[in-house]
Length: 273
Ligand SMILES: NC(=O)c1ccc[n+]([C@@H]2O[C@H](COP(=O)([O-])OP(=O)(O)OC[C@H]3O[C@@H](n4cnc5c(N)ncnc54)[C@H](OP(=O)(O)O)[C@@H]3O)[C@@H](O)[C@H]2O)c1
Image (cartoon, rainbow, N blue to C red; front, side, top):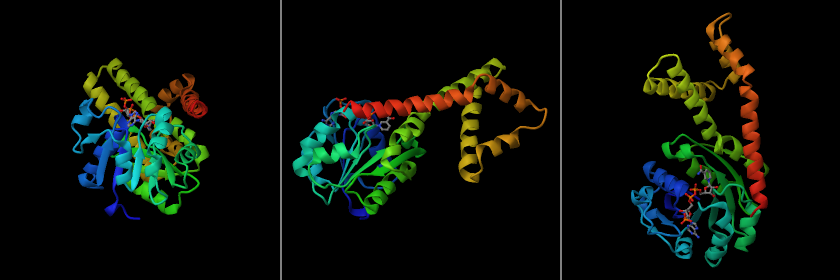
């Protein structure tokens, strides 16, 4: 299976569906004639959707019949209904990819009623600028090729990792919700810059580039973050004084608890479907 000749139907063209559709075209992964998009109210004309170079229809079964790969981008609570709706169009030769948080592959397979390959992906919003992070796992009927195919789609939006399904809620808590946590850190750093006298726009740029640079150092050097932190922290220097404040304010434990809570919430959502 190569993506060159694949046709992809995106079902649910809201925030995430639009981001993925737009990114696939921007990255030249596929051409517009290899894509179809649908939404419940196709004519509601969200600003993001109006800018899409692919028309958004409302016929899910028609799009599913046409496609080789069906990308489900609807809210978790409507995944079952949508899969049941397109059930007659599903074939074992098609690939069903769901980005819905917390919805297990088993639920999708059951709603499909046949041995259709299902892959779950948990992307984050940074996919819109090619710096996304996606966790990917497979259902019972999906093989290595299906995983590779899914990965080749999501790698065009940034990075991806293949994991066991049992770890998907952990990915939701860390890289799915994570951007929101980092924005709060960033906002606080910018606020700190203002406190020490910097104009707000300069403070925000300094903060954002610092977070980006630190993240790139971790990814590109492969060094442990603690080692990189030690390199910034000279004995009796300025940084160690700042670190003492962070430790007193319990930044580490607070961030750990934030990810744990978000992952727990993702796990709870499974039981509400
Ligand atoms: N946002 C994120 O950061 C993020 C990250 C990773 C994964 N996800 C997952 O991505 C999925 C979509 O999230 P989102 O933030 O993009 O939500 P969203 O903006 O609400 O998009 C979902 C879209 O699906 C439409 N829809 C509802 N029922 C439909 C149906 N039967 N057929 C076709 N389309 C239908 C909705 O229309 P109406 O509004 O008219 O109902 C809406 O436009 C969720 O399952 C979420 O867990 C989101």
